[in-house]
Image (cartoon, rainbow, N blue to C red):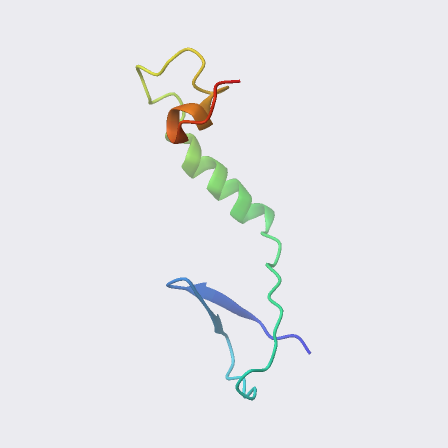
Length: 73
């Protein structure tokens, strides 16, 4: 059986009431985004492209080094 819902405040909320017994195992699969949603996200994130200044020349290659202290590549 398939139920639909959405994420709200970090928890899955069903669109319609669902009466499942306590402890019932469930499986959650994330639905694919529509192309409109993907396009909107790309546009929103591109607002920040090229805004950061003063990064080391190898920042994109060694992002884990600069964020988490991992060895440089």
